[in-house]
Amino acid sequence: MNYSLLKKVRVIISLTFFFFISLIFLDVSFTLPEKLAEYPLYLQFIPSILKFLSIGGIAAAGFIFVLILTLLFGRIYCSSVCPLGILQDMVTYLRKKIGKVKFSFTQPFTKTRYIILVVSILIFLFGSVFAINILDPYSNFGRILANLIRPIAIGINNTAAFTLESFNTYWIYPVELKGIHVFSVLFSLGVLILVVWMSFKYGRLYCNTICPVGTLLGFFSKYSLFQIVIDEPNCKGCGVCEKVCKSNCIDTESTYIDFSRCVGCFNCFTVCPTAGIEYKFRYGNDKKIEKKFDIEKRDFLIKSAVYLIGANTVIQAQQKILVYKENTIPVIREYAVSPPGSYSIKNFTDKCTACHLCVTACPTHVLQPSFLEYGILGIMQPRMDFITGFCNYDCVICSDVCPTGAILKQKSDDKKLIQLGIAKFIRDNCIVYTQGTDCGACAEHCPTKAVRMVLDPEVNKNAPIVNEEICIGCGACEYACPTIPYKAIYVKSNPLHQIAQKPVQEKLDEVDLEEDFPF
Image 1 (tube, rainbow, N blue to C red):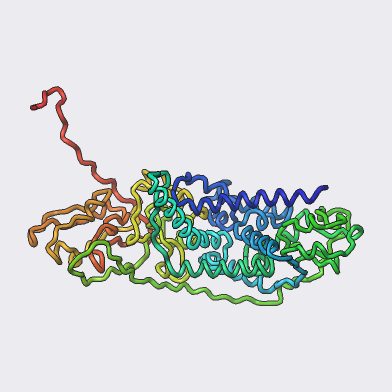
Image 2 (cartoon, rainbow, N blue to C red):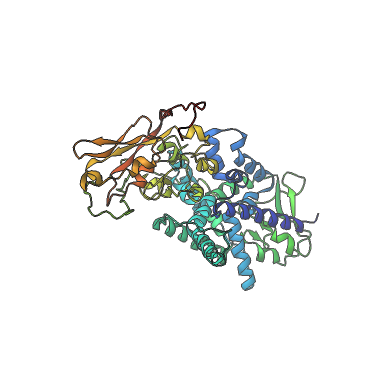
């Protein structure tokens, strides 16, 4: 069998997944259909598990196909589907272009990798996705694109737009960049530096030591039906395969391959001069694959205590319009506002891995990474930031692109009645009362007319009142409010989303078309 062809197929599949996943995150013009995200994200392991736990069914069972592939052929996911793994291969390839790359067999960090895996699972069983949030390879790749690469892409887009504008060409338009969050940027930068450094020096060490998905799939791959093995009669012991093995799992001296660490890159097939390496059926008549290393899984006891630490912070308002008199009553939210379709804060934080795909897809930029608004265990999970933007009345993009089921799909008509929170009016912050200035910005922007302007005899001016029954908490009123430094109207979160009443449609006076116009 021509095993070298496997590498070419793997490279094509890997680049296809990498290209489309990157395209989804870097679509700065918002022209790609939201459903495009379903196909390349269907096989992402952790998001698929979380979505399956949310809605079940074959439409959310991509992880099952990954497990089947792993039990058949080993870690195909790590080599061809995981975008962070493909990024590491690209770094290794660049290193190869810079200078000669030589790897060698190393002992596995067995205890480290299994401790990380078991602790991640325990934390998840205790009801938190905190460990998965910061370790999931797909989510880390998404944050790298959303927080580091996307701003650069927007800068390039805007430079091109302004340049073409000088030639009276307008087929590229500038895009506003909102919501640069320092912690998310620094965290993403730290992960990128760590991954690049480890892959540059040690190949796939990150996948085989830190990544819990790699460890879990590595455990299953030990029992896969087909495994890459050294064919001792044909092997000449030249050691070439060991030098190109980016997983450092081939020991030519002992003619042994640690298949739990093998990521199926197939580099060994392309360099072997004697067909000394092949895929073999594990349960055939051939000599059984010997285990050189006994993985001692029971030589350590893990005791983990998980404390949900809530730390809600005061969100400071940003100046929108110059106002000559500042107000004094701060806006303090007890809970953050979770996106429409998340049903509740608990459901959202239990399933969101903070991949930031919804953040990049949101056309109004109202979805922004959190810091401590959900507590320390919900760090970087998106929240509704009504200082930065507001939720479009008809928009359901975030529910279309979410791969984990943290935001479930919504129809536009259903979404219009989801009550994320209720607008609350702070009279002493409103410029109608503090400055005697006519305003009405909140009422003008309210899509359901839950906020209306009514004459207040006390100041002889129109002031806002809120109909809480039809308010959906979209934040348009808060975003439009010009007061400084605190808003005069804000959305108080519903920890469990409610259903708002339908707004009353105003009837227009009928016109008798048979009558002649008076002019």
